[in-house]
Image 1: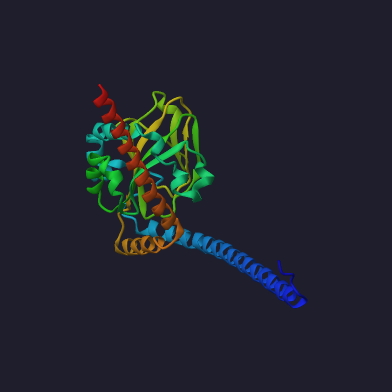
Image 2: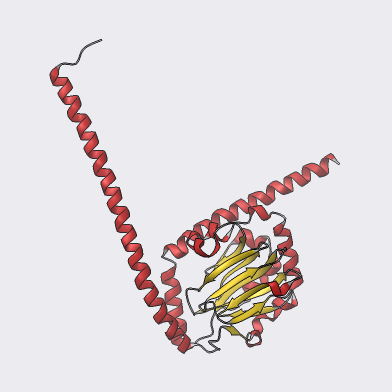
Length: 293
């Protein structure tokens, strides 16, 4: 073994010092980038809220229907087929619920929503997201998908599955340019204890019944029963005058470049693949069992 001379030791020490400085510089740069990112996020959030408030006022003026918290569903004849075919929709979601554990929670799809729904008590089987059709999920519910595709300017749609004794905290939607629809599918027997508050109005789900509301008003959900609650939830564009429609399209287009859209979109695709894999595995198990019989 050869001993290192003074010159070699000096070179080795300088090289080690160089690595330390380089590592420290990289760490500092990463920290700086993280701080810049946090500042940017806070700035966008602050000015974004101001912009959304201003847009809300403008879109309310452009609306061709009521700006009340809860609207009369009879104003929207395109929704009639849902009440006519609600049992078929319920049958489809019952099949999906056979693989309940493969259905993601709301917060797994949209991590920004931890404040209102942290945990697995609220599961969402997404069919459409910001107008994008989730092909694999939609294949699990063909009747529901056909009805949704007939809704003018559909934006989002999912089966909303809420566990017993759960609560979704008060919150507001992002834009007044859409209206939200709920169709009751599987509702606890004690329906009055499973309810939605929109502003000061209380809505109670009933099987086969539909209601429409403006989710920019503060709203909150309780399921104070021992049973699961399942509904079909979907959003469509609010009927508006020309300028309202132009503003809405521009806002939705811009929103698709933000993490508010990009993160859930990626998560939706991942969970769509996982659900399809779970159903395939279940089908294989059933086939294997039938072959043994």
